[in-house]
Image 1: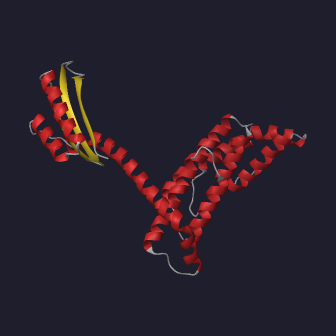
Image 2: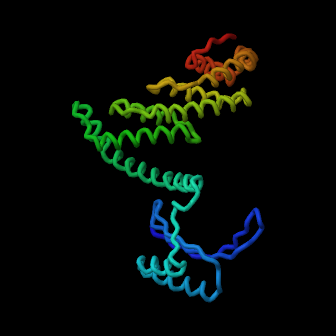
Image 3: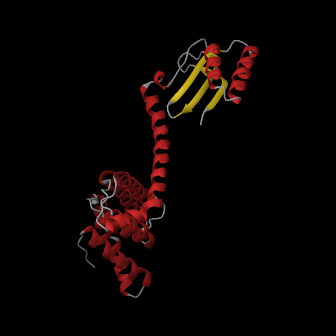
Length: 271
């Protein structure tokens, strides 16, 4: 996990156009732990000497030696994330947190997969789940739903399975986060359908998304989807319905899905 970076960089001011050649060294211990130094480039010989000494210590896993050489080479001036401007701190910490949280979720997923059968048996015998197992299930099932809502392919069967497991184990779902992801997906698909009203696959996906929105134990704001549905009802629907009445099987499927979608959106329809 520990990483070492040494190098030179030419820095130019956007304001004054002045330039400087700088030497830098960074020792990264993981997460937010960084020990870094910067100095003006003096000569190629001194720079190469610094690189050789610090690299040699690092190759031999002599981290105290690396820190000592860095401190000596950069004259005791050590920098960390605290020296950055707040906006830059946030950007870097957000990136670190994304990786860290993904690692944590992977660990909880592993725990849940290994012990899911035991958790289900405990619930069937009315024995409360121990807190560590309940936490693992809560984090993993919420994460699984979030990934499923954002996936390229909307897998309704998989989502049904995860929702059933969450319900059986009495898992509290992240209504705010999951509701936002489901709303965003429904709106994106509805907008695509509005641009391509004859594409049955978009209507089928929107129908499936609305199905999930009515299944989850929290409200999902679908007002924008309802507005798009209403516009399609008063434009494309009339033409497609006539084609369906003439025996066009694809258009018959379209009307069937559109009517089903209207029920889920609680919208009135007319032919």
